[in-house]
Length: 287
Image (cartoon, rainbow, N blue to C red; front, side, top):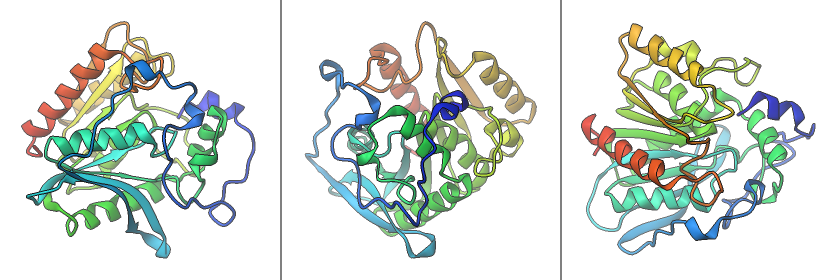
């Protein structure tokens, strides 16, 4: 999440008590702006078991999630798919189906569900405000619950990976420092530095020495919100700490280059990043 954008966001009350989601976003998020239909990738459910599920998390809350996996066989290696700031909408669901077609159990949890119903959020600034209301500690606990749930719902219980985009990319780095059972991670254009606050007290740079799994970072060299030098410093710090981290910069490529429904989409880098993601998972024991 971009701190400058957050400063412009409306001051709205999105507390759990006053605003709780009931399900996932249908279609594409309105907050993301116009959909670029000519580049949208649509993955069918043939040969898959796919759809919304509910995962019990702390406090008795039933968290909505999109689950996709091969209809036959298993157990499957698990990949948790972490949303952009727009929530679990059609793009994130399609990413889960793409992974399922490759033989994974893919789970995209609605990590904003306690704070907001993202189907009712129509402006970018409001989506940024929602993201600012979600505590990192809550996210880490929710992902632990997703991991536990996967073990009895098609996952093999050992091969566990995480991938995420933008807001979710930052979460990938944090979760890799949180869960010792994580096998591998892939972070797509997730920021690594930021101003700490009560809900997000630490950033990836603060926990780089605590990474417990190999992580691949995929970034656009022309990203206007994530300065290249911050990612380079993070990479150097990881190397100094003896961590397995690889960073890829795509020249002349903006933020959100994997989002095929947005004008920021770049087909070449998106496809190359996807291939590198799969190779990374296989190389580190998830595929």
